[in-house]
Length: 222
Length: 351
Image (cartoon, rainbow over all chains, first blue to last red; front, side, top):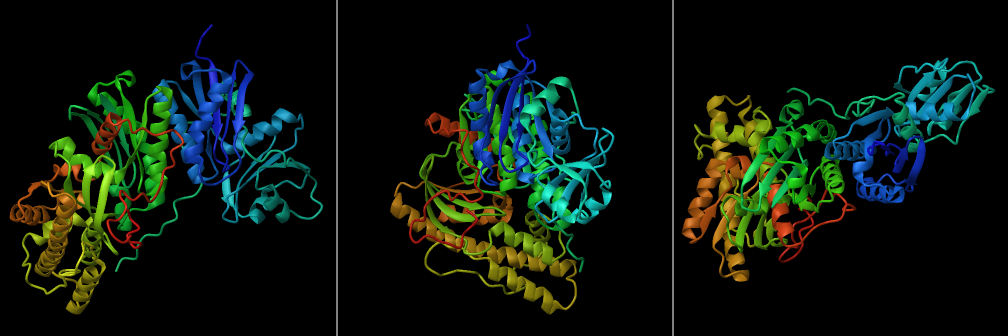
């Protein structure tokens, strides 16, 4: 039996840190802390150590790492990717990225047989949404836009809404739109991400998906 | 003993391997200057993104150049502040992850202590020494008594010295970063062409102020009524550099007296930080040291600006004293190196 089979998956894009370790489809450990936009850089590594201890594993048992690449909190995704890539570099194992959209859509699909379209709405905390509409099981185009514009892209209904920006989107939808709200699916779940990494589903390079350029303007030339 | 150092606190992504026998096995610096140049200064979010983009390659290169494997290391040291927090978080988290996987001690390095101890790496300077730390973000005078034991004698009440260089360069339409550009332009200029203030000169204490000097240069440029030509630019740069130099020499002279009161055996005057790369200031400080019977030491130019060798060395010195940190260490944007010797200076928020 190959010793290096365990997968460590982590999500830090939604202002809390969550870590899962699985092996051969079995969850070995799962820990998450309370949401707090500050302090992820101090809490993440100790939380990873605690999860490893809970799983009873040393780092040389890991076969791969998976981390969310965003969209989400810029600082959060950088903390997560720096840790994931640092562990992968030191342990000489691959590191996979998973978009927040794919992690959320996968959580919906894992818990429903429904063929309905899935609207994934992530609150950008700037008054707009990171948004993707998956139709007929196909991932749509990810975009950053106002809740109103996102509502325009939605089908007449019925469809599924998930993500922590769901309430922003729903306020912008026409009254009596027939939707199935999955308000239990707001944050990427590393337990599902570990499964995605094991089965090779929706994996991308571990590079950040900011979906927004840095806030800066070029100085006026005098 | 070999320590890996990681530096990401401003606009340089750097990694280095240094031994306890003062050997720099490798020192890799990736400069982001080109990314920030269009904005005339460092943009924090651009810096943070760039650090994450490059840190792995920089570490791999440093390990490869030195031919070192993880099992050869005695510890991982990473700058955990002060600096632009987005970048500090990237370097600190990467360092913690490396340390965790290989069960190595993690050393949270204060960037300023990295600069402060560099002369012990390059020249084995003994404690105590007087340190003028001057860079784009910092300007202070410290008495270095031991690793982790610094007394702050004075600091800037407004701009850092390097910041003044950058702002003057901007006023004159010179490139960013301004320090080397102003120095280059000043070479052919007349330092007495324009009368500029010598901030704080003659005042008691060891504090600096450069904001008034910068304003004086702006008035001067405005009074010209036209964009300064080459000769005027040279003269303005030379006059500015002379004024800043006079101010630094005056403040450092006071600091030497203060430091001797606390440490009569004081033997060295040390300059560190990016501004220490300025040859004119180095010459002025060399003269001052000779006049006050001190040995003057400045690190080689490549170790004056931000680098990771200084972080690795700080890691070596701290590890030797058993000063290691936990993986819960919080990266911090502000992290004073020392308590003030007298009244705390609330204005010197930059460190």
